[in-house]
Image (cartoon, rainbow, N blue to C red; front, side, top):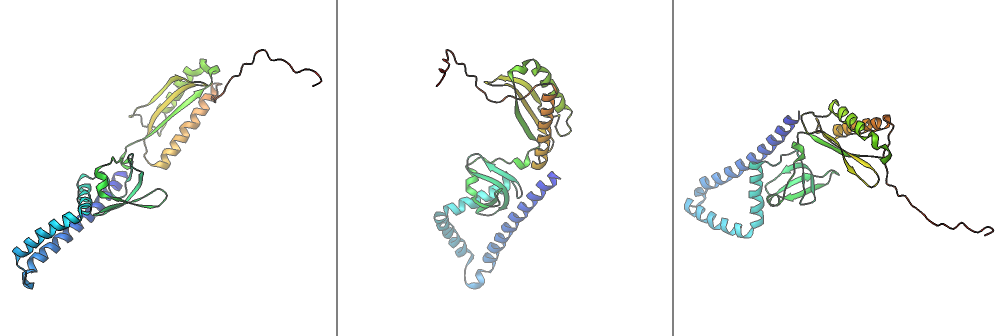
Length: 243
């Protein structure tokens, strides 16, 4: 299903780009073919086109830059219509709604239209999470220091749970290790990937994993740590009676 959606997005993009190229080609051919009927010679048209092209190029540098960047977006295909993209370099994130000659329209997650000049994509990094094959679950389990003797068995129980979880992809990296003596807790790292990339399904899988971790910790008589401080007070003078 996902591959079909990606292919559909690419097909829409390809169709729109090819349609625009064909329209421009037809217009140019018609002007060249029928220009002589209106008293314009072919050599004159070509000369005028060359001079006009130079003038337009000097006056519309940014427009041409966006135009050719749009062409490169078509050939490189870093994203297609319907893809979720984001840039770590700029505040750009959302779903690609349209790839035009000059600008690309992106619909943000709060349904605001965002118009990005095509030339910008040649100077920034673009992530395409819509084409990822898995989603990652990563978290840290913080246990109390008084549960130190139970850390080993809890680590093994959590690892075994993930190895048998239907939503976890066993072909991907799966790590569960005690990895840190923190100020108030003994930390266990959990790192794995879900089979699905659909956000809602990933959230459901992550929630199920977290709930199972809670059950494992509590079933072993342990509990989760929370930030705490111990205050030691020496030589405290008791208050005098009657005051």
